[in-house]
Length: 167
Image (cartoon, rainbow, N blue to C red; front, side, top):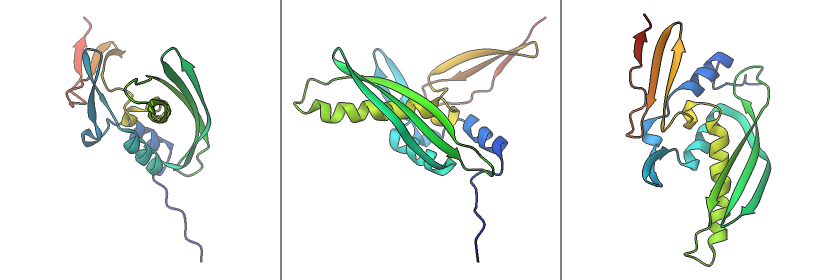
């Protein structure tokens, strides 16, 4: 007796709606970049989330290039969304990290760090649930109304949009 496959999503719309959600605030971490605090989603959470929404996903191409005092990493990922009749998608990500001069074995840590950041960058391009809109504020004009969407780094994600009528 064959068991019918259970999908994470009933169709592409449900999958895309999930990607558009704000990330769970329990997933978020803060870090300082320059003089600003930034919110990010740790790679283990990104990968666990990807495992839930894709039947399979793999890094199919990766390159690391030494630059000045650091490394630039690029990845290409192939994934199969987990809904009926889904087709493979391909997406890319890149990241750079500075070598840390504090340890003799810094490359042992810095190269995987750059790779992980590139993977997180690739998934972030797919939707808000992976952190695409973290640390951003933007304005959209929808049907003659200006909608300001704010995603701040104080762990508040979807403030009510400010809507202004254009008169």
